[in-house]
Amino acid sequence: MSDVTSAQTAWAEADAPRRSLVVFTLDNQRYALPLERVSRAIRVVAITPLPEAPAIVLGIIDLGGVVIPVIDTRARFNHPARGVRLSDHLTVADTGMRTVALLVDESMGVMDASPECLVPAGDILPGLEVIEGAVKLGDGLILIHDLERLLSLEEQDAIDRALRPGDGGT
Image (cartoon, rainbow, N blue to C red; front, side):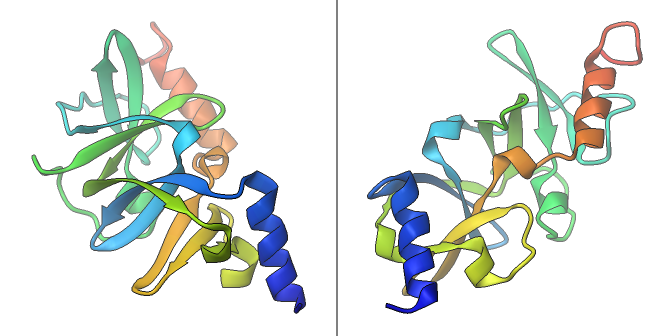
């Protein structure tokens, strides 16, 4: 067994025999998040601007009485900017530090990826900081994002300040 194959096998088997992933698209490119980190996917709702938030934050939404920052996923994943469309979706997920809503083109649903289809990030391209790995399919790759690295510490702090009442937040 080659080193690459054994690394792929070790990475895939470390998490589970199969991984459940929530798949979404941006400009026909598929991405995924671990299912256990996603609470829901909904159609886009009104996004309220959040003064003094970092540029990556489009604003906030109220989801069942909880204020959640909306992340500009297009900017974070290096896609061309465009306005919010009524057909867009929000994928609500836990980064480990906070719950965020990722603005995506479309939520594709949940897929179960078998270990032989999983590829660690280092085997795709070394230095991909926000990528946990990928699912290798016959029609292309689905990049799996690491939610814990979605926001920098500076962005986390800026969101905290913007959300704090009386400090320029809501």
